Length: 142
Image (tube, rainbow, N blue to C red; front, top):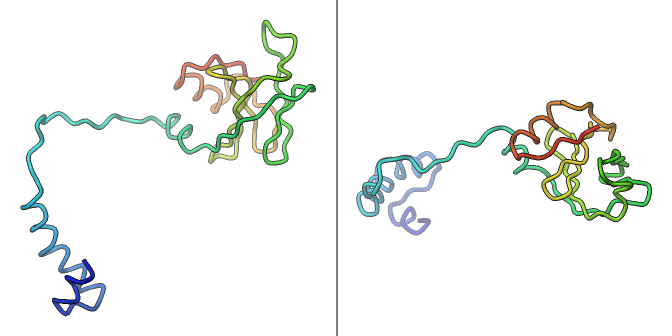
């Protein structure tokens, strides 16, 4: 592309953009464009919870003997889980979301949700509810 612009004596961004818009893109579309085999759109809608999950920082952790997982210097206390005396030793995933909130999961099970300071969020919080509904996680947040 740079050589093509140079051959045409194009040296400014404005001239480059005009060339791309008026010459290059139409020529490219004529050569490589074709009608889709299927007119039906292949795009799949994504909801906010899925985007939240996709852009979260995920870090593998092991729950300590005190049922605490650390992330970003915060101690995330994993609440008591039904059917388990302790979560100590579990290999979990700690996540930090763009909102600054945190979650700890074990497989597809949500063990806890936390605010930006590491305090447990109340059951039914927006974070816990969004994760539970979008991913079928069993909501066990504090």
